[in-house]
Length: 416
Ligand code: GLV
Image 1 (cartoon, helix red, strand yellow):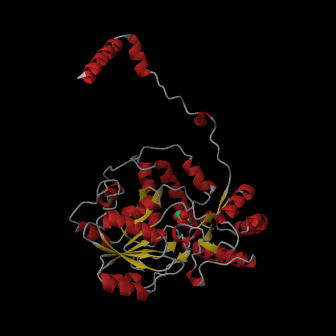
Image 2 (cartoon, helix red, strand yellow; image 1 turned 180 degrees about the vertical axis):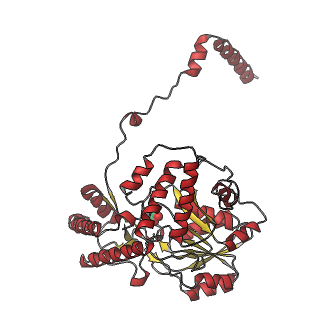
Image 3 (cartoon, protein in one colour; image 1 turned 135 degrees about the vertical axis):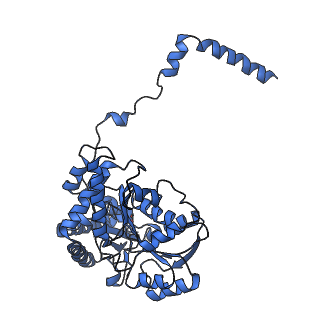
């Protein structure tokens, strides 16, 4: 009783006060001041990004991001979107009509693939030999799919026999596999996988975020049903727009869905209409990140001009130089089998007695070079060095090896 009475008295007092001009002013006066940090100029130091991504962005791609934007339905932007589609078809080596860039990072493309392919009750076989399989399994479970895990120790890849056994045992409708495992530095062979999956009535979904452009992938010839990548690694564009493509088989499965994909933003039916993949008039879906689209267009143009085969060869050669140099420094590569090493991201064991954090911090502080520690199952065990796209050069290998040699001498105090 007392409390109610007290409340109604103060409510009346408030109403009275609010009828004055003073109260109106108080309600429109901001109380949170402008943040100090934003009143200073933006500070972006120059660094050589030799971690697992992002890579440095070449001037041509940077310049595209600095262009004035246009409306997302202006004919020039729609033309850029068409050019991106053709560029992705080239980069993926596919004629799939349902090919476009999702508005988001490579992780968003992974979500788009799973959200559209899977629904409750589907069985998915997930190859887990690093963090990306773990992530895919996590997302698939959220979608209500039955997730069967196929495990390999980090540093190893799946053989056709492993996969054949998994398919025969679990009878999945989708197999998820990572082509370039950036957390372990392993390259997954793709030969024969698509055909094997199709013989078992299963679709093949391949994550190529860390490998596309750096190691051969031929989507149609290898009978891959869904393939995606990011923009920030070999393509050397800022993260934000990510290529993805679906085969006719994958489209048919999507058309047979009993339920709509649970994400409107990533619904490939709607996105396909917006990107005019079905030959029908375009339907607005969302506002594409225009500057990011300009950058991706230029990054794909750079790849088209260089040529896929040259790009694969460039990564192979530069990675081999790096591996030789690391071994000359007395370091040990994490992936034992040479053919299984990812040409874009090299994993090297943290040398005994060193703290990996001191090495990465030293490279950053003294040489303005980023390399990274391990991730997921390799955390604390490896250093990861990425030489991708614009950064995949002999000069960068030399610069890194010198800096690393310096770091190994100066971080000796951190020996345990
Ligand atoms: C990101 O892709 C990473 O491997 O850290």
